[in-house]
Length: 115
Length: 114
Image 1 (cartoon, rainbow over the protein chains, first blue to last red):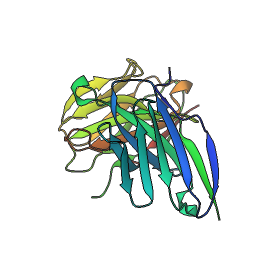
Image 2: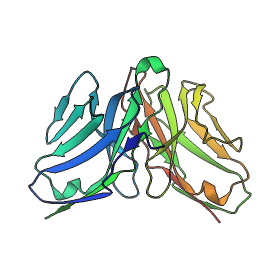
Image 3: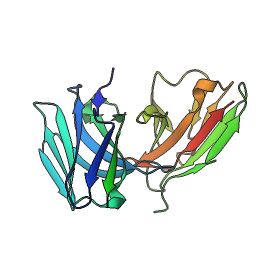
Image 4: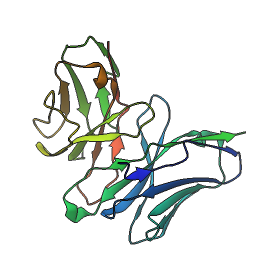
């Protein structure tokens, strides 16, 4: 069972426009969420995170929004640049009291930014 | 910060052989993780160390897999009697021992079992 779902395998966006990547989760024990970016032949690179006590976190061109009631989060990239073309993974961590540090990943969304 | 280093980058082996991968984490990180990624999937958790103690193992980690972190620094992942289904990218990550510290991944070891 997929506890973290990224339902869009791919997304194409024009350079300069907004990219919105979506992620849904099913496990109520998740309380910390991360986005990773992955280029071919490289490991995933941490991008931005959000704790369940917040509904928004911003870092430069990247903003993550969390809607706990809907169990949904999204990553906004504004403005999109060709170098942002990569696979983006959503990942979730259980609350610290669960005693687990097992990060659960979605299947990823391949973003292509067209110049 | 030299990043997480993994060796080798690629390994091709015949079915039934044993293989061993090495991971050197970021020096001040005392948490170390192994993940496996297959085509079209996100990374899947295998196991986790805090210092030299292996604290968590996934059901994916069959008895043919063993991981060690003998002195709380580098780690090895050994797969015995490899099977074609073991072909995957094996990723190592490390993090600080502070709550929900982000994982920093290496570039992985790609294993191909023929």
